[in-house]
Image (cartoon, rainbow, N blue to C red; front, side, top):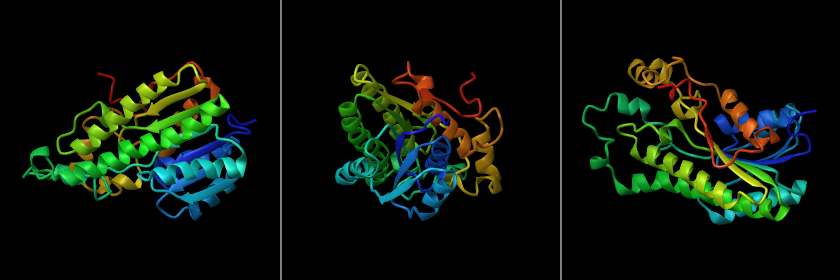
Length: 264
């Protein structure tokens, strides 16, 4: 038996990176998976099905309240319930990709707050905080009605580590962490748990090419004692733990698969 046999999981950002790895791992553990993403989901659906699960894809913009509600409704319509939700959709910058490469060579401090356009700040918070809140809310409403469920938010080690030039990302992920704690507290007696995973630097499309950029890679590794990037599958394993009853006495917490970033 798999750890998620008979369970139904909704995963935003499930078409690539951590979300996709989590969808595949959940399917291998017996779950049916509903993937929400702005990116096309055919390949992710095929991979989930290859792993042994049934899969549904719905184009989802998590900054849209209606899209978040529709995603959860689609899961219920197709599979009858929602047992696990993973809010993985997120961006590093208003442009999308991480700015770790840009920051490594930013002698003019162009990415610092004093030079930051308000709309660039707002865009990251809209996706990373409001989008996660709306995803969590849609999931929680259904789960509370069921009397059970586990929500896992993808935050970041940047929720706790200030990175010069990355204020929108750091602030947004700190917001995800606090949202997790508050929602976990609010739902503590309902049978619904809310936790977070805060990865360190992980080999996803968000930082694609960083290993070929010595200054950027050195910057990332300077705060990563294991001196390597994480793998999406390693983050998915942490999500799996929080999704199952193995973590049944945990809520409002954040796990850090981050290569030892918090050993100090």
